[in-house]
Length: 281
Ligand SMILES: Cc1ncc(C[n+]2csc(CCOP(=O)(O)OP(=O)(O)O)c2C)c(N)n1
Ligand SMILES: [Mg+2]
Picture 1 (cartoon, helix red, strand yellow):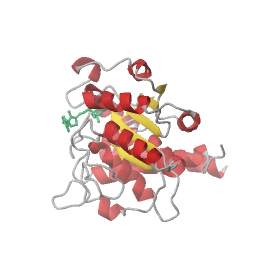
Picture 2 (picture 1 turned 90 degrees about the vertical axis):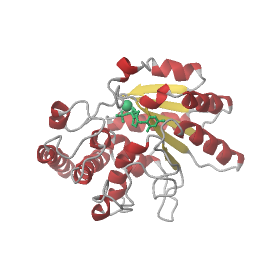
Picture 3 (picture 1 turned 90 degrees about the horizontal axis):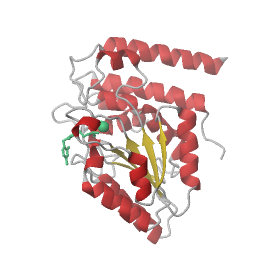
Picture 4 (picture 1 turned 180 degrees about the vertical axis):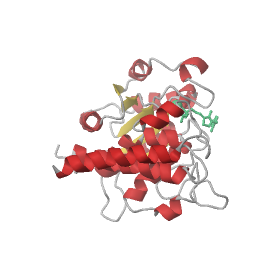
């Protein structure tokens, strides 16, 4: 399929999303490590995979299940122009409408997702309803490895496979991290692909940070018939900003004073400059 954006263009957008995430979170703290790690997935989704509806929004649906990862959506929707950075800098402030875990109806958010584990089944229901209505809309749902420990996720997978929902893509942020430590230590979730395969889904394990691989995976998902598709993305917190990954590798939540934000910004600015130079060559 011909792409809307080149790989390099998307990598530049991902770097800008990472920069936005730092800018937003450094004000009062936030879920910066996830937003940074998921920037490539977010760039691919909002700038290539989700089809525009011609009215300023998207024809396809993105369902965020792990509400705290809203920061990745905010970072991207600043680049699309749906939010301003001034607005987003109120993230985590009393009285701000830019919630850390948004509620249904806020621009960019299909469901209220603070209570984890609810997204996959709601996305499966949405995909089923759209198919019943004869719609060609596709549904993409991001959820986390921590959520894999919840039964509702597997009920959603079972339903989606039984209904042959090939308009549904699950994107798992398989970062081996949950609030209280490594998922492998708290309650192991692996082998993730084999589990979804056993439920009747088609799967592929990827890094989640390689743009060419991401685009190829979305292509494969679109070409898959009669099965839901599951992308298992082995991201690691802070992927794309090495100095912060070294400084605070396990940071489910990043407090305002926990990291050297200036160093992170300097590194992402350098990455962005190098990518832009490559584009101008
Ligand atoms: C049903 C439910 N149980 C517990 C929580 C508290 N909680 C918030 S984030 C989180 C960690 C979940 O793991 P994951 O989403 O993989 O964390 P991340 O990789 O983003 O750090 C937990 C347990 C919650 N929000 N909802
Ligand atoms: Mg996790």
